[in-house]
Image 1 (spheres, rainbow, N blue to C red):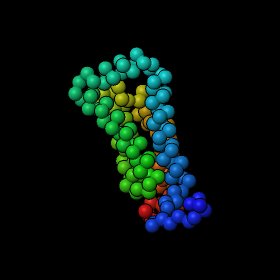
Image 2 (cartoon, rainbow, N blue to C red):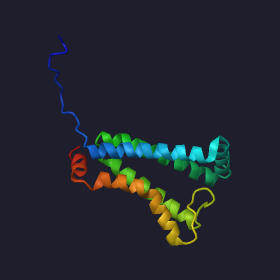
Image 3 (spheres, helix red, strand yellow):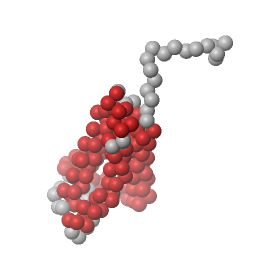
Image 4 (cartoon, rainbow, N blue to C red):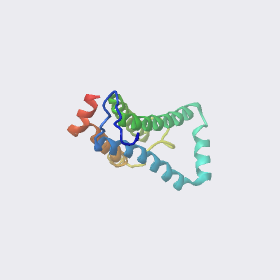
Length: 157
């Protein structure tokens, strides 16, 4: 008989817009696909060598660990977005600015370009490659900030 009885909730349920759900799922899938593509490109032995090269100096280790933390923060933001946390979309925006800024700087010769950089002959070519690499993240940011339904959802939470 409990199946037919009404259940009472003390508060309204969260109605997440489809665009926010798509954006959160895209963040998770983009990071998972990035990892799979790196694993496919390098293979198991290449991954071991990559980690070994990444921890040769303290500075490289710091950059490597910071990049891992950045990925985990992005995934954490994706789960928080679905809960309606406005700060999560701003932190995700900040992670993208940090990642793009570091890739740009490393590609121009500031930092360690042998591990974390984009290949290119000129600044224009590097910028074009960076924008193409960050295009999925830019589209996710647009889903979170541009549509009125997304803005309203985060404003009301």
